[in-house]
Image 1 (tube, rainbow, N blue to C red):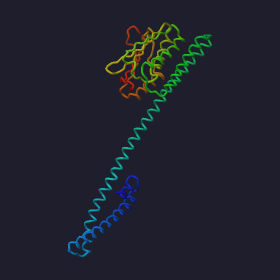
Image 2: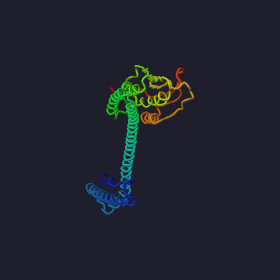
Image 3: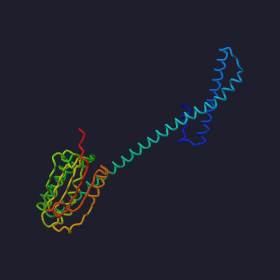
Image 4: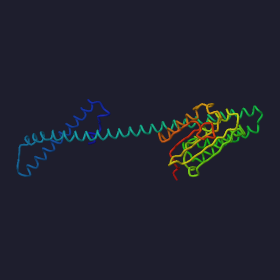
Length: 303
């Protein structure tokens, strides 16, 4: 069996495969016929039934060639079939591992891409405040930015975090923007206590709030209210980010920037078709702005 398994069909040329195994078969078949004929000769002598050894050898050869061919072929088929199946399974495992590795790398890239996106915007805001002589506000923003960067670096490899930790990070970002806009914006939180421990994609809320700030707070002459809600709907977490926006419903287009596009792709990588992101007009009659709704499976960290 060891000799039959040393050269398999998948890794060698057909000619080399046939020459090797025909040679091994003939060698083993010859040895087997010779040993079988000697055994038969010995048994005949023990039973006092002597027979011509040539006749015994001929009979052993006739039966041995056919029998040995069947046995050797079955062994060869079993070994090559088993190896082919094992190689196929290994290839599948390698393909799955490679796909997971590529997905993780892409997810890591998307998460890293979001951080410079808002960090650069914040730096620009700080520089603007300094140029305007608003030193105290600029220092306050820098302090909050330092805390935010510390969290971002600490959690850079965490694809998912509990919602309450995500909100802590978001509040630092909101604090930076409130220092910048003062009374022009307010942020409200309505979180179902039961989902505060549930897992959400890290840094998923910040780009959505940033989108409201960019297209509602910055472009509206009056005060803009941003609300963040999280509820459990039949084991599905629903996150909603809504802004009051402009009083003119038609005054604002639905725009998907870097933040929203990345958020959609991250959700797809993490949850596949089990997650969704919808952006549209606010469903709240008191608001005239936009609304982003994320739905993800309700998951908790393993204890």
